[in-house]
Amino acid sequence: MKLRTTMFSTRPCSRSPRASGRFVRGLVAPALMTLFGAVFGVGISDATPYTPQSDDAILMRVPAAVQQRELQPLRHALAENPQDLTAALNLSKAYLDLGRREGDPRFISYAQATLANWIQRPDAAADALVLTAVALQSLHRFDDSLALLSRALRIEPRNAQAWLTRATILQVRGEFAAARQSCVHLIGIADPVIALACAGATNAMTGKLQQSYAALTALMSTGQGRAAAVDSWLLGQLGEMAVRLNDSLAAERHFQAAMRADPRDVQVKAEYADLLLREQRWNEVTAMLADNEAQDPLLLRLAIAGHHLNSAKGRRWGDLYEERYQTALLDGDTTHLREHARYLLEVRGATSQALQLAQRNWQVQREPADIRIYWQSADRDSRAALSQWIAANHYQDAVLQEASR
Image 1: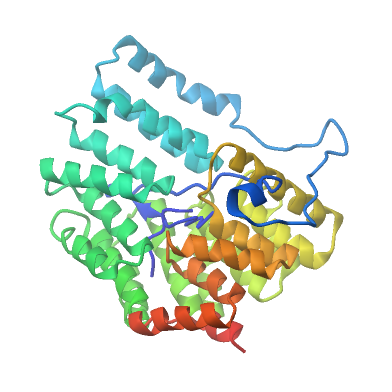
Image 2: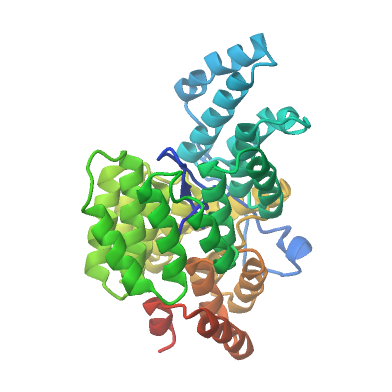
């Protein structure tokens, strides 16, 4: 099981629940290809920029005015009293939530900027440090996030959100022993469900997948009245583990239950779509995600399904994904290596270019999706090195076994 922040990891990286039971998801920005060679040293000769066919074509959806208006009272409160930490924290949290709902990383940056002055203070509050660390985690600035978490834990050693965020980052980076130790600190200071799920996430990556799945299944059967987002998170973990255990029926059941619990959970939708894609259920993917073009991780899945259907919509989704990728590169955003490696491999068939991005991504994060794209695009030497890592960590994944056949 994994704790995902990231998103396109979307989970580019993973996501983790807040200690209160709410979520902050990692958000992957869109991006582009004409500068791809300049930025990554990779050329894509068959990439053609997307040109809208009419003035009515939708390139990107922005948050509706009503959602923007939701923030006005919070902005006003902070403007009225710039020294009010509570007002700053409330606005920052609102930006994070809006960024999660809309799949727009700009709002994650706004959340960070709202607290920038507060964390510079020598007497910075732990809450400001932790919330900024969560934003930086979502932007894949892991070292900076860990540094802020260390500061926060020196102030409040029993800050559950700080320990959970730290555990999530360390697990994403493949530092499993340290991640497990951070989970231990949650015992007695966080909801037992969160503490156990944190430990199970690390154990599932290090040779105890079946045991972790059984423990989480039992955990789900105890207690009632959990927040919908918590249930969605737990069910999503069960689905991801069932995939790795080669139990597609159970995985589909878990993902569908997770989506019923929280229909806005982008990460669960993406993982369910991945299951459908592996089973070549292209039309089901497009039907499920047709209204989700605004979320980049889901647009990627639409592009992959549309490519296999060889449809006009599929070509448009692919071109739109490329256009967004280029835009993100222009903004200096390189947090989406995993997702674009997958796009290159599964839509463009550019294996060598996909491998280069997968290798770069591997230096940053090592979740199941990172392992899979690296394995699927790897040449003989790269796969041998990855096999050593898999063996050393006792990592289990039926998807890799299938890809090896």
